[in-house]
Length: 427
Ligand code: GAP
Image 1 (cartoon, rainbow, N blue to C red):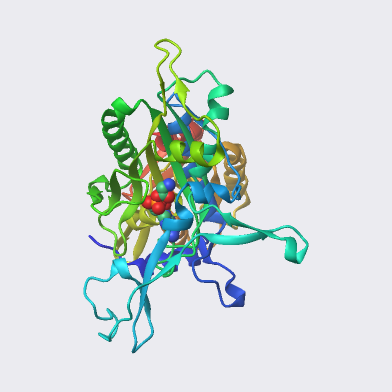
Image 2: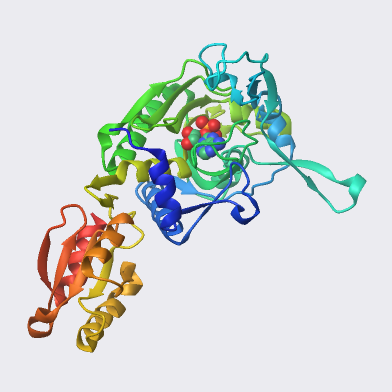
């Protein structure tokens, strides 16, 4: 089922997941801010990715590179010449489109005639230095991965890694997109999670296939409906790629691409060796063979994944809205309620449970309105469990635990509650 983007945008703002950037000044196209619940969910998501990359693969290490690099990096990488978007404009309604998104030569909005494509470089320039006519031009990074190539030798020299190995990174990238839009899907500032896998040229095919499958399996492990994910093979390739597949969220009502798996070969290290004058080759200490490692890249969008996860988790059951999120991603793992806010014994008991769980379980407290409204409120933000302290609790030290997805209830002993939540949310 394809779900509506409008409902997600509205829920995201209403409940504090994502706000439009600079809203009180009328906004700024292509920029968004994550709110209190959004930042928790995004941090949970990034922590899962980081753990999977660096703790579950002993031959992958992480870095956190700078956003601004020496501008020569973008010459060497080919971005100054080739990081371009062709733009067309409707002569009648003046709406602008990426030429690549247009299937015929008429305006998709009003059917008007389109201009010839004009080409724009989408790197975001900035100026460094304080004296006006001595300022130097630099660029905010257009893709996060370049700092990995710049540090590949530093990582090798400071660790005991040998080819094949990987360097991963989560970080911001900036693009002067000609048509930002569709909420988090196409922004001008966004976050990428990248793995660059360095291997022997003869092993590229093997590793390309390996990472393609591994990354798909990882995405399948966090989506509510893994059947909504699929591969798309690119025919038109980026300037650096010899082969490229996307991992798509097929049920998206907008664009589908979530992550690119790219065969970058020796493009990056050869170009940086040429432009920097440094030797970026690798010598196998056993065979003494010297070669430029080839690279398989997996480069995904954190914000796009976040958006697709919300779309995938969104469910309606009558007027009940619930986010069927993987519990590991949910901002809160449980919410604790006293059945009645005006009964001090219930409130005291519920507060004690809340205090005992709040540090390591990310639990919410709610004593407003009636229980039904509290359930609705927690369902809408994806809290997997609601825990109610009622009059039976005072007799037998058990609580009612209600499940978000099935709305069924069970009694759990207070002494077993922490364990119950931990097992259910850690999967
Ligand atoms: N280093 C390779 C690279 O940057 P890409 O396909 O241009 O490849 C990788 O970007 C991922 O980054 C995309 O699959 C997408 O998820 C995300 N991404 C790219 N442009 C984006 C934008 N304008 N807004 C949000 N996410 C974007």
